[in-house]
Image (tube, rainbow, N blue to C red; front, side, top):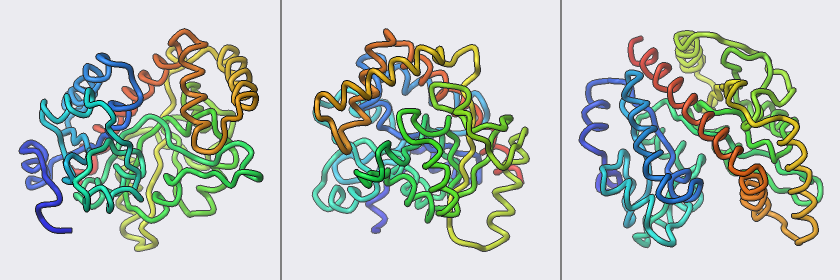
Length: 305
């Protein structure tokens, strides 16, 4: 890419030049994941959480065909409030840059751009994964394949619980993507502290994660990611019984209404928000906040090595 394709905020450029810790943040949660005007307030809150825990935030988006690594106040406002702003995964980036388009970046888009920009740690809410009824739909998130070939550490609350979590973990294993439970022996369930599925590795300190990142580089294997699965605190998780009941109802509603393929995930997320009276959204935000705090601590440990 030409030097003009990437535009860094002054804060991020200075941090990268100094070798200071930087945490990438996705912009899809701002543009598509939260209602207005709360989305803009949350965007600012997450950036401040990164700073408060010793790192520099780099919220990533594509605006007018330019990759923005770190957004100023005007850029954040535009992502939060521009009508019709698109959603860009990795596969959308080339045509978006070629046509001068604007959009918020998903996990796959953000992870790729962050790695290209020299940022090693990325905080998000939940990853995409293998969809339910995969045998008949063959529907799998682009996040998984991208993480298999991108050297970045992703701090998340697992994968969205509306997906097939055991199949997603199996797929990550097949792709060679390392998964670490942070202070947890079971993989988180996004809205829930646990999905009930065990993880092979549990670490308890950011310095241990940074050491695993250094070992990953020293081994010289495929350029795959490291997933750090950080559970939402139990006191802030969605009530498990409510989660299970509403999810079952949502799946039945999607089937009745003929919702299939890529439309299933946004349908179910919206259904959960509505039928839990916003409790699922609050659990989602609690998870994101925890991931942002942890990512900043990991980035600081990585930078100090």
